[in-house]
Image (cartoon, rainbow over all chains, first blue to last red; front, side, top):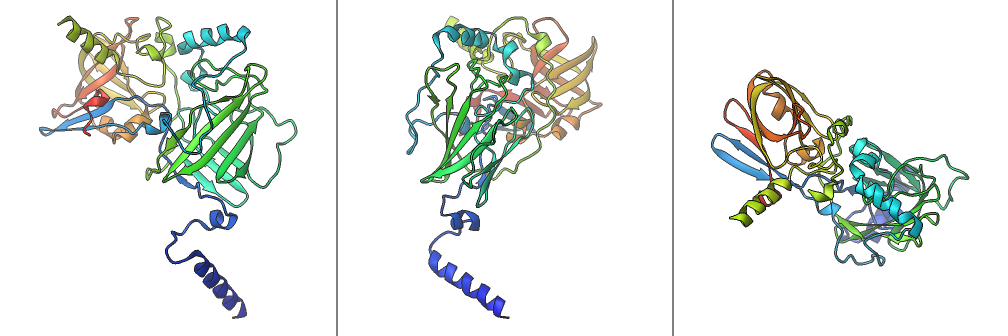
Amino acid sequence: MKKQLTVFAAVAVLTAALGADQAPAPAAARAAGHPDLSGTWLFSIDLPPTAIKREANGASTVKGIDASGRRTAAAVPGALPSTPEPSYKPELRAKVKDLFDHESRTDAVFYCGKPGVPRIGPPRRIVQLPNEMIFLYEDISGDPYRIIPTDGRSHSKDPNPSYYGHAVGRWEGNTLVVESVGFVEETWFGEGGYFHSDAMRVTERFWRSGENLAYQATVDDPKVLTAPWTMPARLIKPSTEPLEESPHCVEQDGKFLVNDDHHGQR
Amino acid sequence: MKRALLAGLLLLASFPASAHHSTTAEFDVTHRMTLAGTLTKVDWVNPHIVVFMTAKDGAWKFESNPPAWFRRVGVSRADFSKAIGQTVTVEGNRAKDGSQYGYLVKITYADGSSLELVPPGAAAP
């Protein structure tokens, strides 16, 4: 009975502290004193821009997709200064161009490969816990997850290389900063043939901009870049569309390619 | 007239488009073929769904947009598989290497209903 009273009193105090006009936030986020990034966010992987036209019984409807999460936003409050492209060391620029010129054959993502970080972009769903963040993704290559501790720990010593890296997070004001290292070398960090080395370090920043999730990534790889590259920020709308298992990926186009056109030429 | 023709070609060339291989490296986007046959199978796979059919000259396969795209425009596998065993008409772009393979742009079912990929500008505001 005493225990029940104590719980009741604690709830009453917490309710009074919140104030009657404050929207309830998840307990974990509120307790930690950080912005609430949890939720389901718009699917932001590149999709064809086409729309579907349905005709039946003399009626016609057209429905398109919301590709806003894929595009870079013009001005996002809180974003770091960015540049459109990374700066490679002069002796490596020809390699980047060659990879890009032959992307239909050289980009592993075109062959069901994992995009890695940061190419996969922002997660579809974020679960925010007091000492860790859980990121859930939907991708053509499969549906990866990332569990990111935010309890102050540092990276593991010599993490095994992986596509999505070894991540730790921390809060800088209202921004969640996720640092990832320990990547395999076969991914690109952008569609322009942006290869990297095993020294790549990716810093992703997540913050709220109104109802949206703001996302911006910085790639640092001193073995291949002349300076860290911060890419333009993106704004991701909230979504009510539940996550769904991505179908198996079966690449079957490579054998039909007759030239090296890349998709920017369509 | 020449400008209108060029604009039409550009429009045609602008789709199908995806995050996958170049369309122009694989398909003849300047010509839209039409083929009638029996729908035999629908593979709901990434990176492109695949529709199988049997026509007068044998087996054909047509890929189309990714499953994630179809899901977001409200089309499911059932919208295709409902017609397995029935006659359908497919319009699309044939593989440049001459294979009996193409990119499905439109499918019309026996009851006259259809699904068609259209340029994004055709979407209602």
